[in-house]
Image (cartoon, rainbow, N blue to C red):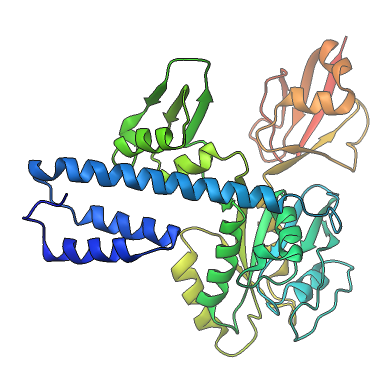
Length: 392
């Protein structure tokens, strides 16, 4: 199968690949082998054969993972946390990373703070006041390597995959790289993608027409592997649209309905301990391009207001206050998703009534050059807007 003029590195890697039995590692070794393959015409058939093998291996791995997720999904709903407040944030970290102390510092909760593992035995909610709303914080029991294979781990990560935001809690007095490897690894195994763009790849199932791929220029790899992978998975009659630069892993995620895309940030705890400044710089250097990082100290109460604002910003919500002509605005706001328009607020007030009888709306906006303006249903709202609806 192999041409005689392959490099010694290729021959050595081919032997490693053939001796590897673990499926996931076999994929890794085959990808390394392909990266070392010769580029001349005589090797084209060999490379094509290896690509087909790679597609089949990836399809088999995806199938096994789907079967494993199906097996795990039969777990109990015991310990589920009902969402409350304007939004929900899950605090996720290894044991003793400071999650309980941090939540106690910004809520009225009295969670157990201890220096032994699993002092929080199940997901525990608490309400954090933030200006004129409340945000639900949920402490997830400390993660460890293999947590996704345990009942408490599956229960906790099910809550995390359905939350509005994940706060990765990192202890500046412990090894940074070890903590991040554990936490990010377990979230990844649970099919939770953090700060990942879900619209890079769009999948459309169709009744006929075979495999059609648009936006091939955005695919970061050899487009042949896309067709080979889909055929190996026996996926037919589908349109794949690469709408932004995308990798093979993003294609696999787009085909998997169980993948959850969640906004996330890092909360660095114990900023008062010796060496914390150096540890924070390491954390910022390694992960600052992917996550916003907020340093805190629950013991000294440092930077807790900044943490509250960061959590609020990551919920992607806005507050709108309603007003009746001749009166002050209401104290309690409507909480809407970021990007909402006047019609969304009208529907939340009285479903169809305000929309059907809508005549106009007046927006009062303190930080705008025009403090008062008359607008229509499609006008975009901003956080802190005061809204007066007029109807027929």
